[in-house]
Image 1 (tube, rainbow, N blue to C red):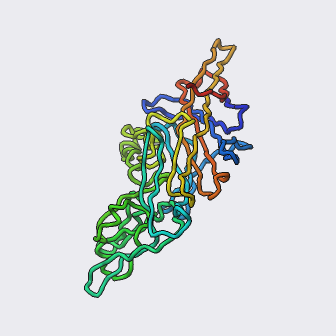
Image 2: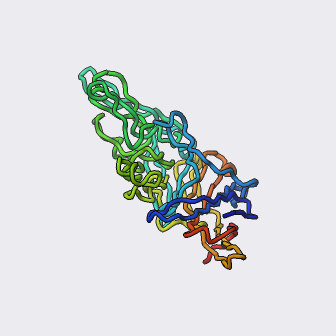
Image 3: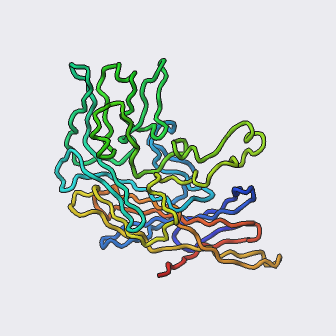
Length: 348
């Protein structure tokens, strides 16, 4: 099937096995919007390139996922991810401050950011956390959230399954070294008040989760000998479509977003007021056409907005962007010869 569009977006068609092992067609459409001076979203020209491989900050085995390839058979709801830098309100260096994202009526999720500090041993052999250094900015990256690697029993390395890229993972073997241990700069306020260096913290952040990280990895199912013998290269029978969701749990929205939602982010602007925006009020649909000589007609199919990636790293709102991906699943795609991605105005 040939897919095309006259809109400034990048379309793609590919085939995949559905969860019942039938073949389905997937069409996705990707667009990027930038902010104008008056805060209105402008669709960027030309259409953004499609991503065909994952991008990591460094070593893919342990590094932060910067962006995932666009090919996915579907998602549960909408992934909302955010690239941003936390900035101290008022522009003055602070020891810590809260950061949050809100979609009215849909979600509110937040955590605390703070300046660098360390666990250090005292003369009484008790470990104490040093006060955080006042800072004006904290990059919102999993590299500064709880996790990472640490020495384990019998010389084996312990790796934090939820965030191998992080810092602050503490083991008895690491304490035995007697060296200062960096404290995460992203976490919850309650966790930062705990005085035990061995206490586990939760992983907080707005960015995408890599396929190899938990809990996402667990959604892939069982890749055992039975799978290799009976199902390869199809996904395991116990796999969940949620495996393709890249957003952290609090930022997976089901039912999906439709566009035009209001979003407020606090703690990322030196100004007193939060960053407020409204998603582009855009929708997409597929106009499917069959083979005329085969007597096949056409169909119209709405596309789901399943990926919203906001880039709010720039201190100037005019440097902000929103990348949106709509996706549609087509049963028995052989029935159609072409698919055109067209605008689908939002209702209400």
